[in-house]
Length: 77
Image (cartoon, one colour):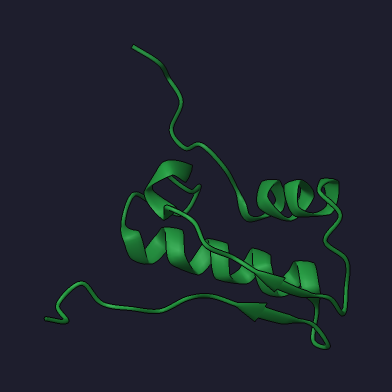
């Protein structure tokens, strides 16, 4: 059994975003499966993962950047 307690940190995500070219002041569009990232260093809840990802995205684009995320529901119909 693996001793891995988490899969990533906020700094890991910021580094990955920098490596793919995300810079301060940019506008980025993010569409992903949050569960595919695994567990953050803050815990195993969806709220923990959301908080870490949100902070990493905001840090990557800075105060002058914009993060666009699609929001929808499966309950329409």
